[in-house]
Every structure is written in C-alpha cells, then in structure tokens.
Length: 556
Image 1: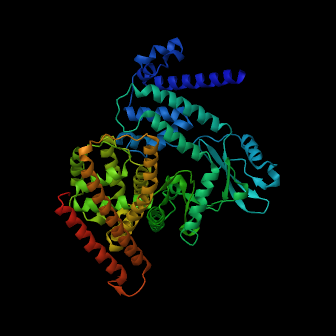
Image 2 (image 1 turned 45 degrees about the vertical axis):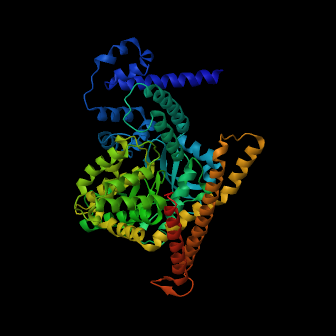
Image 3 (image 1 turned 30 degrees about the horizontal axis):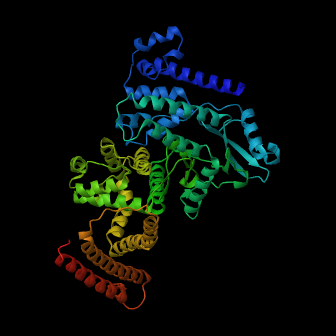
C-alpha cells in the first residue's frame, strides 16, 4: 500500500512540475486543456491566461523541454531527426537541445559501479578519477586505470535514472491520449505512436550492453583503417549500466575549431570524418546516428575517433535500392517514379497518389538541370519527408535519421573547412549505387529474388487447397452456383489450370537460367554463360506463345 502511495505522490509531483513549467513559459491554455490546472496552487492558476509567450512556439517548447529534464530533452533531440513528424521550424529549434548536465557526486557513481561489478572497486581498478570527464542526463564518464595498467573510460549510468524515465514515459502516454482529441492532426503519427517509438529508442539507450555491441561492430569495420579509430570495449566489465572502453586522449570537434589548429588539420579531419560516415552508410548500411561535435574526437596524427554509439541507423539492401531509385528519378525529373518509390517505402495505405505526384513535381523543379553528382542527398530526403508528412505518409524512421545525419556531416564539415562539399564525397558512392542498380546483373538478381518469392507462393498452393478441401468436407465452405453454369465453369477452370501450370514451367526455366547466370558455368557470351542465354530465349518464346494464346482467347 505504501509503495502505491509513494508512486502516486511521485506522479502527482511530476505532473505539477510540468504544469508549472508550461505556465511559466506562457502555455497556460495547454495546461488547462490537458486538465492539469487543478494541480497548481490557486495563485498560480491566475497566470494560466495572463502569462504571455515572449518567443515563437518552437522556441517556447524547446525551453520547456530543457527545463523538464533528461527524458524531455531526449524526446526533443529524437524529434529533431523527424521532419516527417514535426515542421522544419521545430526541427531546427529542437536541434539546439544540449544533453549536458552537472555531474553527480562520485560517491553515488561508485555505488553503481560496485552493484554492477558485484565486487569492491579496488579488485578491478587501481585508480578512478573522482571528477567526471563529461556528464549527460543518463550517465557520466570517469577516467580509470585497470589493475592490469590499461587506461579506460567508464561510462556509468546515474542511479534511479531508469525509474525517472519510466515515470516520464507513462506521463507522456497519458498526456498523448488527452492530446489526441484536442490538437489538429498535422502528422501521420498519432501522439501515442510518437511516445511509443520514443520509449523504444530511449530504452535502447539505457542498455549499455546494446551500445557495446554497436561499438564492437564499428570497431571491426575500421580495424585496419589508420585514419579512423573506434575505442575497444572491455566486455568483461561491461553491463547494462556500466560501459568500459579504451580511453581516448584527444580533443573534440569544438576544441578543434579553436586557435592552435592549422587549416590543413581541419580540412583533413573534415575529409576523413565525412568519408568514414559515408563508408558506414553506403558500404555497411550501419551508421552512427548522432555524430555531433562532442561525439567525434581527434587524437595524435589527426586520427578521427567516434564515441557514443547509443543511436545508430540501418540501411537495408532494399532501402539502398529505394534511395537509388529516388536519385535516378530526380535526374530524369520523373515525379511518377518518385511517387511510386515513396509509396513503396511507406507503411501507409489509401494515398492520393495524383495529388502527391503534383507536389513532388513542384519539388523536383528545385533540382531541375542539376546532374546527379550535384544533388545533396540529405536535403533531398528531408524535402521528401516534408511532402510525405503533408499527405499523412509514414516513412520508416531510418530514412529520416539518414537525412539528418548527412546534413550534420555537411554542417560539421563546413565549420572545419568552409570549402567542404558533401556532394563531392558522396559522388563516388552515388555513382556506384546507380551503376549497380542499372546493370543487367542487378535486374537478373531482382528477377531471381521475385521468382523465388513467387515459387514459395506456388509451393504453398497445395496446403492452401488442402485447407479449402477440409472446409468443404466439414461443410464450412459454401458457394452459390447455378446448375446451368457448371459446365462452362469446369471448362474455364481446366483452361486456367493448364495456363497456370504452363506459367509455372516458364517461371521455373527463368529461375534456372538466372541461377546459371549467377553460377558462371560453361562458355560465355557478353560475359554471361551461354546456357543461361539459351534458357532465357526458350522461356521468352514460350512466354510470347502463352500471351498470344490468351489474347486469341480474348481473355487479356
């Protein structure tokens, strides 16, 4: 009973704090609509309508998020990567949110270390600096020395932060439910959906084991690169709340922008950093999702080091193909193709494609006459996201994160080198993607994959027919048919089955020919096996004959 009382008091106090902060910044009308005004003292309720905003709504909400602490700051930071959810003005304002807070006393941090290691500190470490190197809302970092003599950076999660975040998430859900009926729907996502996605993201950030797995993957990607470094993870002393990594002695990008560093050094860091990020994105489809100034360090000999792998993005093979199709369509100024690709990427049905095509046609005017190697992919993706938002189209979040990351690369690159141009660095990757997408082998591979999917469907036909027959045997399958049409239906059914069987045979031959192409067996013609060409030619002629038979029967 007492635990429930304590929980209720915690929630009421937090609701009251939210109401006070919003009222202070001139959002009293929102407090009233949310039903939070009763939690305010009487003298405060007079301020609900009297207190006026001094800045734009975007700035006001940014200040509110900052004052409400860790969970709300994280919400704003994540929303700043989603132009498909919030407008450009809010994206730009929320990008200014900084997750830097004063460190808590070392004594509290040491308790967490002992709890996680299940042993006294001196059994593992010969030394731990009591002063934190850096401090964020979820955790803080301390330099330490292992008993083996190795210097490490210890990222320690702050005590009770998980509970604080869970309380805030529950409160956000309640407020989101109340908001649903009160605010105009300007996003394809319901407020509760946004909170659910945020909860999933921040819970991942709370799990340092997941972050260590990300870091290990990046470590292997750049293992042999002399210009890029990823800290080594000490897995034996890493837990969900404690992350031990190789200590990096260097300066972050902010420090690099100060005096004491040459123009050549900055240019090199801009180039190496951009190429490393593009390698992650286009070669591996696995990239750092938050490469801001504090997460990129420069060590001796201008080696670029990436830190903090809590937020990562993924780009699947299909996603890369969609991205390439969008780039090809923009050069061809083919709004219909862009629309088709956006619809294929989305999770939304019932889209007004005609209206969408007109809006995309207007968007393409901005890129008219530009060659492929002059198109800024980050801006292009964000522009498309803005249009998609207008039509209530839900696009997978990784596309939004990709666009934001590419824009961040350009922003940091230009701070280091005013002549920096992302397009120059993306050009080789884009050209390669387009070349691969347009190649005959890529087309054959697409056919092969689609035929494989079709063959699985064909294989499933007997089991589906079995289920239908079982329903018929049990009397659960009922069809109303007039006796006079029975003979005609039987003849039509036989014809259909024959054509289907013939189609399956042709599909099988195409599939076999594709496999011969990919196997590279036997003599070759134009770089591809002759046996594959023969199979395709036979399949093509049989397909033409089948189409002719259908046309002659007047059934096409």
